[in-house]
Amino acid sequence: MADTLPISEAFLSLQGEGKLTGVPSWFIRLSGCNLRCSWCDTPYASWNPEGDKQSIADIVRAAVYSGARHAVVTGGEPMIFKRLYPLCQQLNDAGMHITIETAGTVFRTPFCHLMSISPKLSNSTPHNDPRDPDGGWAKCHERRRLNLCDLPKILIRYPNHQLKFVVTSEADLAEIDALLAEIEKSVRLDPADIMLMPEGATTPDPESIRWVVDLCLARGWRLCWRLHAQLFGDTRGT
Ligand code: SF4
Image 1 (cartoon, rainbow, N blue to C red):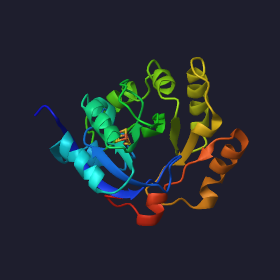
Image 2: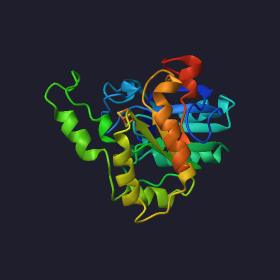
Image 3: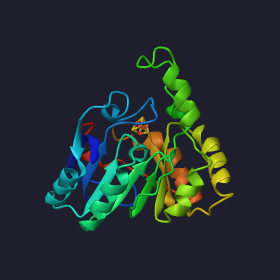
Image 4: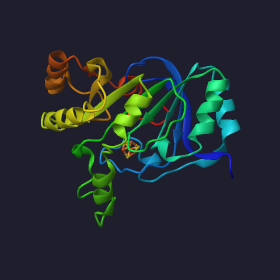
């Protein structure tokens, strides 16, 4: 069908991450992803995409009926779908504030108010993952996870952006610094738009992420909390 998109779930919750943390939002999770992160917290939209195709008119109608003023278009990877353009256009026509959550590997230019980009570090690659017995996805993921040609273009095209890095250990810092240096050849970044998000489906012990706190204090970056995980645990629809 021409005007449909695969939806794994849609629900009302509080935005749990980033600049709009705590804002009541209608989440539209598109099903399907061009990556396979080892720690993906929505495998039902990536490793095993679930859900049905729904018409864009129905998706927008449900968003409006939710009563939320904010819509978060997430995944999976929303940017792999060309029909993101009419979806975002119609959400905007309905007066909603739109956040797109992406890994930043695909350059498309649908309308949104906030572009939330989470470039994937090497800690995301699914080495020896039982879901990938022949290692095909590990190779593919490693090849795709950073698009240094398009990432700066996305940041320039969407000046209201945030860059969220999922971190697992202090060893990630060198990788982040190298990536930021590469990006800053093309676009100047505001440290307040750079966020470090400790990996994990549950709320981390403050002592275990002391190094992240210290890094944010030293660099002027933000600590990105997962409010939804703290409030609702590792459950779908939150
Ligand atoms: S990019 Fe996002 S949805 Fe896709 S595998 Fe990684 S964490 Fe999951």
